[in-house]
Length: 263
Image (cartoon, rainbow, N blue to C red; front, side, top):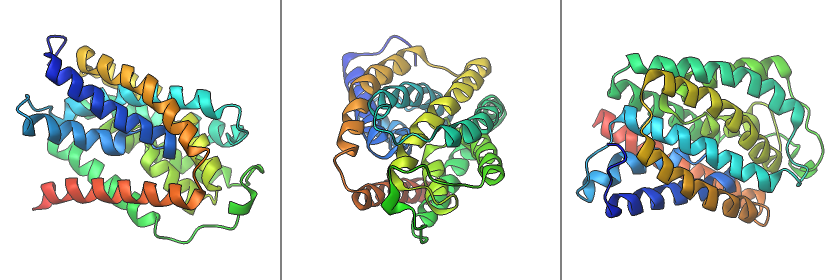
C-alpha cells in the first residue's frame, strides 16, 4: 500500500484520521486508541486491502505526531501544561519509544496486537481505580514523584513504541491514578509528552522501514484539521465527562482486539 490509492480509500483514511485526531485533542490520547483498530478492521470490511498490524502501527505513529502537535497549539495558552512533568516523562518516553518502534520490526503481527490489547486492558482497569484529591486545583501546578514518573514513562515508551501509539492512552491513566495529576493538566501535559514520544516512535518506524507515505499523508491532513477542534471542545467539557469518554474508548478498543486475539 503506497501512494497509488483510489479516492474511496483516501476518503476512508481521512475519516479514520479525523475521528481519531478529534478524540486526541479532546482527551489527550493521541487518537491511536481508536484509529489503530479502525485502520485494522474497517478497510477490509469495505472491500479495501487490509493493513497489517505493522503497517497500521507505522501509519498511526505518523498521525499521532501531527495530531498531538496540532492539539498543543490550542492548549499552549490555557495554563494546563506542566513543564516539569513534560520534561521528566518526555525525556524517558522518547528513548523508550524509539527502542520499541525500531524493535517492532522483529515482532510478528500477533505480538504487536497482543501488546496493544494488554496496554489497553491495563489502561481501562486503571480508569476504574480511585483518583487523588487534586482535581479541584486544576490550574495549580500538581506535585508528583519524579523518579516514579520517569520509570513509568520509560516502560510506557517501549511498549507503546511497538504499536505506534506513543503511549498516550496509558499515559493519561497513569497520570490520573498513580501520579495524581488533575484531569485537565493530565490531558494537556499528555499531549506534549505524546508529541515528544512520537518523535522517537516515528524515527524507530522509519529506520525499521515500515512507514507508508500515502496513507500517512492522508491521516496527517485529517489530524491538522481535527485535533485543534477536539482540543477546543475539551476546554468546554467537564472533567468527569472527559474521564468517561476516555474510559469508554479504552474499554471498547481493548475488548475488540482482545476478543480477536483470544477467541
